[in-house]
Image (cartoon, rainbow, N blue to C red; front, top):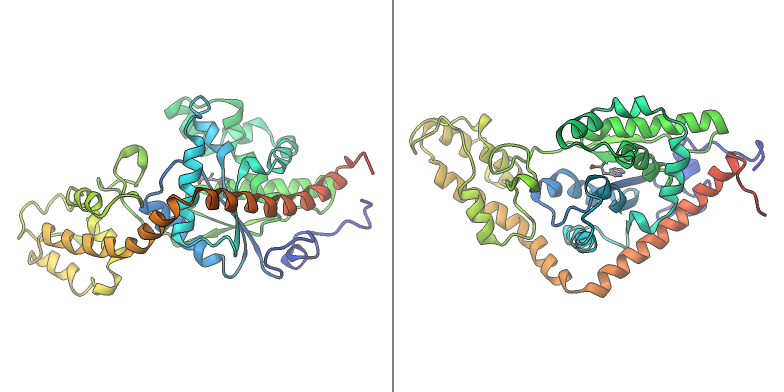
Length: 354
Ligand code: TRP
């Protein structure tokens, strides 16, 4: 493409239809988000990310990506369960309300353009910039992760985003550095080759804090999680063992809702119960014991999850449908990325054949 024909891609008007030529929902800002296929989701993933995605699919053009290549950076040896985990993730997403009519749901490795742009972007960033990122330093020190692939994790993430011309990326605070890096890479690319890539911004979501049953961050590896797949009984048993205010040893001891992880879950699941006026004062005065308090939470949490769990059971066996959704999603994703990559190759003078 000649310089004359190059268009700026940094505003949403260009991006929606005109610039890319392909849009699932014309005229709307584009959103890309991704999740590693770690198997069945827990309520931390559900409340922290998925509910937000479900809301955004009505107002945005949405691409939801199961990032299997990113999963390899943590465990490249053990790939035997990857397919199953991808399947489970797709089922969880659909059960939670992601609608394949409204958004593209697909697997990262079905869209090779992510890998191509990753390689091109990798030229534009120095190794020390990557080794200084907190996400790299932490995992390198804690888990000895020092592969070339892992070092490039945020560059691949940037490619995931930029290859769709996404304007916004809904993520938690821990990821904002990666989105900043994606935006910086878009800026660099545009500086060297002319305006081509959209500079994305973080859509910081007000994520309710979902503590695990031990009061720490909910995580499958810590086994302090409530899986969406868990039955009501399993959920009940886990919540019965959940940590509470350590100073409230006996039923009638005054408690401190502000430090109690069970109360944090009430804040998410018991909104209809007017907890500031019921549970909080009753806990503080010692009227309400932890067992009764948990019983109320268990009822509300199970009630909220019931429709998702029912839908999940219904979808789980529809193997053909789930894989069709992922295949169709990849078709939509490929259509979009090919247009963006065409602009990228033109900008870099790398379109060698007519
Ligand atoms: N790094 C993200 C996480 O750990 C997952 C991810 C990969 C992602 N590619 C992405 C998130 C693109 C948003 C956009 O949660």
